[in-house]
Image: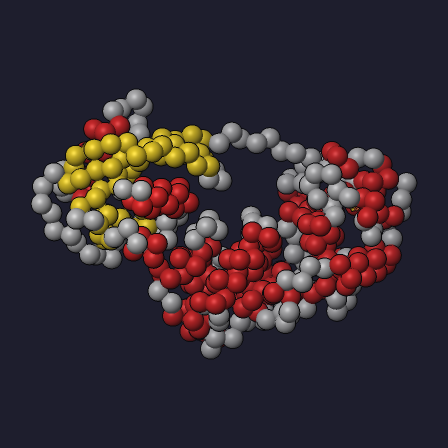
Length: 360
Ligand code: SF4
C-alpha cells in the first residue's frame, strides 16, 4: 500500500502545476476582481465554457466600479447563457457594497469577503488564497474527488463528518506561504488528471501517494449519491405580435432566472386545453384578449433541476391596444429582442423567429 507522505505530495503537486497549469486570463496578475468574477462563473460550469463569457464580461464590465454602476439589464445580458442568474445579480450587489463600504477596493479579510452576496465558504477561501495567498482551504467538487481518492475514502463525501474531514485536510495540507498555487494545483489536478470518469492515473504526478490507486478502488470513489429524476413541466408560451412588435415581460427579481425577460407564458395544469389556458392567462396578466393563430414550435429544454416542454404559439391581440413601455413590460421589434437577456429556451425561440421571418 502506498504511503501518504505530505511533503512528497506537496512538492510533486506544486512542481506539476508550475509546468502544466493552463494559462487562464485570471491567472495573469491574480487581481481580486478578475479572480472573483472567474470563481463565480466557474460555479457549476467548466473552464472552457466560461472563457468566452469571461472575456465578454470583462470588455463591458472591466472593474468593480463599472459593475456597480451598470444597469441590471446590462449585467444580465453579459451573463446570458451561463445560467443561475442570481449569480450575476449577487455580483452586482456585492460590487455596490464594495463601492459604498470599501471605496471600490476588494476587501482582503476572509471574514468580510465571506459576508458579500453570493460568496460562500468555498468562494471566500478561493479568493483569500488565490488573490491574497492566505492559508485558507477551498474545497470544490474537484478537490473533494482528489482528496477522497488520495485517501481512499469510499463513503459518502457529503456526510457531515466527511465534509469536515475534507475541509480540515485541505487546510492542513497547504504548505506555508503557498496557498495560491497549492489550492489551484489541487483543483487543476481534479480538472485535468483526476477526472470524474477514467482518471489518467498513469500521468498523475502524485500517483505514488495515492491510497485509492494502490487499493484499486478509484472507480468507486467518490461514492455516488442517488440522483433524483428531473421534474418535467409543460408550458404554453405566447409570442404576441402586433404591428411588427412583440410583447415581452420581465421576471420578478427574486426566484428562478430572476430579472430575465421572457415571452408571457403559463405552466399547464393537468390535461387542460393549451390555447384556452393561454388566452385566459394573457387576459389575467395583461388585460386584453388574444387570438391564438398557430403553434410555431414545441421546444424541449433541460435546465438543472427540471426539463421543460415549451409550446410556443403565435398570437395576435383581438382588440386595438396601447403599446405600454414599462420597466417590466415592453413591446419590441424582432431585432430589439437581442438586446434583452432571456432564459435559454426563449433564446432558442428568438433564433427560430429570426429564421422564420427571414424566410417570409
Ligand atoms: Fe487521481 Fe489517479 Fe492521481 Fe490518484 S493516481 S490522484 S486517482 S489521478
